[in-house]
Image (tube, rainbow, N blue to C red; front, side, top):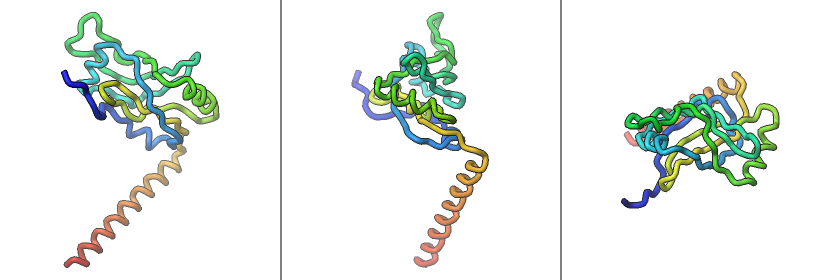
Length: 159
C-alpha cells in the first residue's frame, strides 16, 4: 500500500469562527483507537460542541463526536469520549498561561488527515459578544456588495 500524502479534511467547525475571535492556531495530533480511525476515514465526525482543556500538563479534547464504526464489534469506541491531544511541552506551557486569562478558550476548528495521521487544528479564542457578531456579518455583507458592484462595473465596461 502506498504511503498517504497531503491533507484530507474530515470535519470543520464553521460556527467557531462566528462565535469567537481567533487569536492563535495550533496543530495537534490525536490519540485514537482503531475503530475511531476507521470511522474518520469514512469522513464522519462533528466538532460542533467540542473544546480542549489543559489538565495536569496534558491537553484533552472533549465533546467531539466520532460515531461508532459500523463494522466494529465489542471493541468499538464510545462516540463522545475525551481524547488526548499531542502537543509539544512548550506549546502546552504557553497555552496554560493564555487560557487562564478571562474569556479565553481552546476550540477545535478542523479535523483532518495529514500524511496519513489524524490532526486537529486548535484555536486559542476569545468569545464574541452579540454586537461583535452583528458587526462581522455587516462587514461580510458590505464586502459582498462591493464585490458585486465591481463585477457589474467590469461587465458594463466590456460591453
